[in-house]
Image 1 (cartoon, protein in one colour):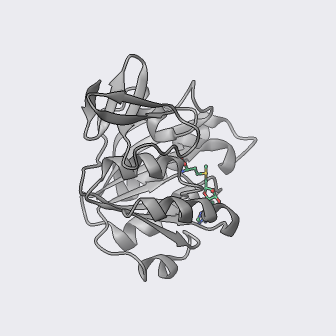
Image 2: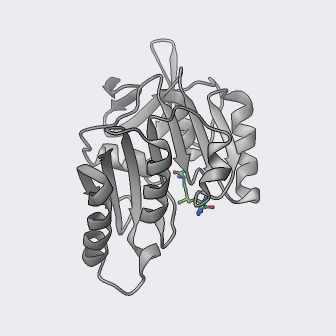
Image 3: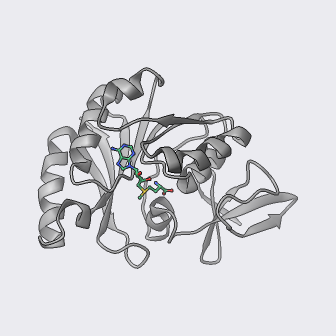
Length: 217
Ligand SMILES: C[S@@+](CC[C@H](N)C(=O)[O-])C[C@H]1O[C@@H](n2cnc3c(N)ncnc32)[C@H](O)[C@@H]1O
């Protein structure tokens, strides 16, 4: 088991995080024991961050004490792995579906570094009342205005030179335009607010998704 980034491990072709709640699975993932520690497999078809790591991303700006604003948390699959990584940090996990957030609420009962927030990521006021000192935004929201949502949140929450990770879903922006044209247009918008540190497609794990590491200007 080799630690390839803070709290992210690789053995063979599989990724793992150290299970913060030993014995408990979150989404049916494999649990394995190594040197008296329990690791959870991080499945790249279930998490775009895992897909980006396996596709060779060079920078993951997440430390053990990161304070993360996570937009589009769903039931917490990726959030749970970030919760394994930032053991001394905090994840403000925003999700606007009352049905979906129920699983996230259950997950946070055993993981004290997850704060579920039922809110619309477009409405900064709903989020800002419940968060503080954020140093990274992670966004995975399949909406037409996903770039505008990120920019609005970054302007509200990120200091200059702080990072954002964005999973951009082309087909949510347009189901008819060429994917390469969508990427071009959306990255132009991003470049006004961020330096693009890295970008990569998530094939073969996710089709028509671009994953970006961004630094606030
Ligand atoms: C692709 S899923 C996220 C999967 C999750 N990031 C993971 O890896 O485990 C996108 C989620 O974003 C949520 N969402 C979409 N628009 C939103 C908005 N404006 N505010 C908050 N959540 C939103 C959806 O309800 C959905 O659960």
